[in-house]
Amino acid sequence: MKIGLSGGYFNRPLEEQIKTFQSMPEYLLYDGLRQVGHDVIPFSTVGIPRQKLDIFHCHHYSRILHYLSIVRPYPLIFTPHNPFIFNRYHKLGWRDRWALGRTDAVVVLSELERQVYVARFGMADKIHVIPNGLKVGLYDRPDELKFRKRWFIPEDKLMVLFVGQYLPYKGLEYLFMAVRDLDLTLVVKSHVGAGSIIHILAPDNAIIVPEYLTQSDLTDLYYSCDIYCQPSLAEALPTVITEAMLCERSIVATSVGGIPEQVPDECGLLVEPKNAGQLRDSLKELMADPSLREYLGKNARRHALKVYNQDEMIKKHIGLYSCVVARR
Image 1: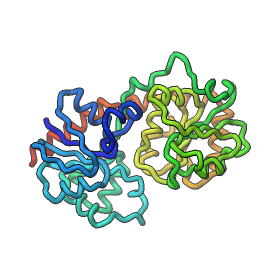
Image 2 (image 1 turned 180 degrees about the horizontal axis):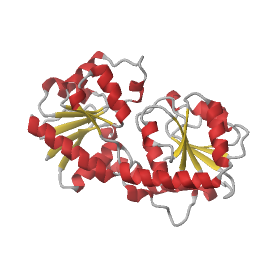
Image 3 (image 1 turned 90 degrees about the horizontal axis):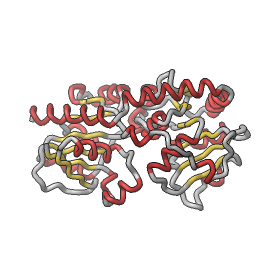
């Protein structure tokens, strides 16, 4: 099958991206489809495809999606990756809404997201749940952990980790309030400049790690922490949580978007968004109970290996592509 694939990941040269990011959904789909013998052609979000293709899959609302939804030269699959769709006051622009209705199938990342799209836009017959999957072999424990030594964090100091962009909906200010004065080190891995306000807002027990990390360094970072925390106000299905689960970390996260499906009770503790008090209490509970951290971490890895692996994701996408092509 000859497949066109677009997404923000492909807005920069692929060779550069692969060196830095190997956990982006577009890349994992591209890589997995090629591994099983499909011809996959990547496009930027502003590209105009001219090739003869069997099917096209767009990630994110973009110019290429708008173009293809008008001319419809191929069967069109779309994955929105929109964390704000769960907010009932969030409205799509008319171009995005029109393009959504013109697709042959829409891929969402959780059952709750499917329910939201069906309730708001109908189209129940063409909305399919396929969670993002990762290359699980990239998340095996390294022989030696280097992050704590590099940043002078003692081995016996409890370490809480957040990985992600510094954006308002990530809820970092609530995490900062929650950990202030707790006997732990909060590590925030975020691509921010030296002049970012995050350096002013962060509490004294926080370390900001702004540089890009290789995949092996990122895996080292996850294994170096004791608890992974995601305080977001909105999410679809955060890849960083799946990464932390594959690295056998206990999870504290907000119950927004697809996170309650991603992190069942036996894998972590969920709290209300915008509630620093609940975040603090959950972190303190795990700080005081190493056996609970271990129990949640082992369950988290087991769950992620079963549900959020690349092979399963590829199998489901190929099945969907085949059905859509056959109908068209």
